Image (tube, rainbow, N blue to C red; front, side, top):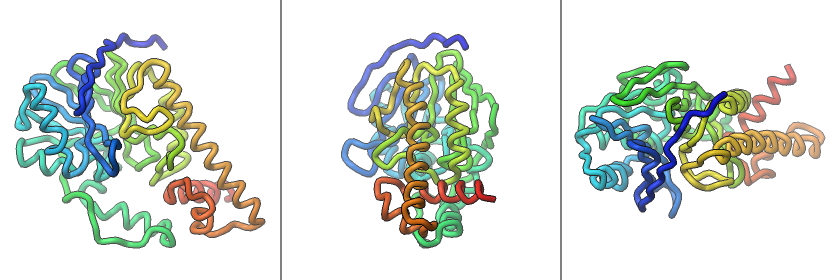
Amino acid sequence: MEQPNVVRWLVESSLGTIVAADVHHIKCPFSRLGYFTSACALLEETVTLIDSGTSDSPEEAIFPYLSNQRRRPDQISKVILTHAHSDHCGGIQAIKRKSHVEIAVHALDEPLLRDPMLQNRLLNRRFSEIFPLTTSRGFEPLEADLILEDGDKISLDRRQLRVIHTPGHSEGSIVLIDEETGICISGDSIQGRGEGRPLLFFSLEKYVSSLRRMMEEPINTLIVGHPMPPYNRGILQGEEAKTFISESLKGIEELRSKVLGTIEKRGKVPSLREICERLPEARPSTIGCIMESLEKAKR
């Protein structure tokens, strides 16, 4: 497939990067020093955000970045979510206090947006030995204004974004592609490898299928949800983008092999907790998804 032309215009500051024309990548501090959640701002007649970081992100990063670009919080008209996890949707409440915004999310993640405790209950139901029920929540319940499906086209002032449903990390994860420029905003749908990646909450098979689908997409610039290995950057261009997807596939395949190896060494299927203890470099929910996949394969 012929690759679209993209303006290679990267102007970086401590708060973020001008990726191309009116596309801006904002680093929202998260979890530890130097680590961030990506938010993207499309600065047209109004401002469209793709993801909103945590509850602190608007005041810490998004509003200051917009101010540097001579834009105001009350110009934000839409927040499109790549998925409904607190480090990507937690900032919406602070934005709503400044501006009337339309919230868009995939249909299968919309229940997580309405009920911030739902993911924990689902994980407890599937993997109770490693996921106890908790009472904490990372954001206040939110109502979506626009429900997205695979193949939808979101028309903005000067561009159109195509929605690709990429389940795996969550059931309703999506990727957004501007086909004219080849810019792809992937949230946590593409996770890289190493340092505890990938982090899956929904499905191993769906994650692998989503990655294979993304390998066929015309991508020149890939904006990922966090600075994930092997590149540990939020923005990847050219061959790096395709390599990152390929490395993500290798990473989940290698982890699956490690889980199988652990089972074979024991001579019997150990508990999920035991496998997590033997593979501390992997995320417990990801190991759970792998075990579910292995169980399905036996049926």
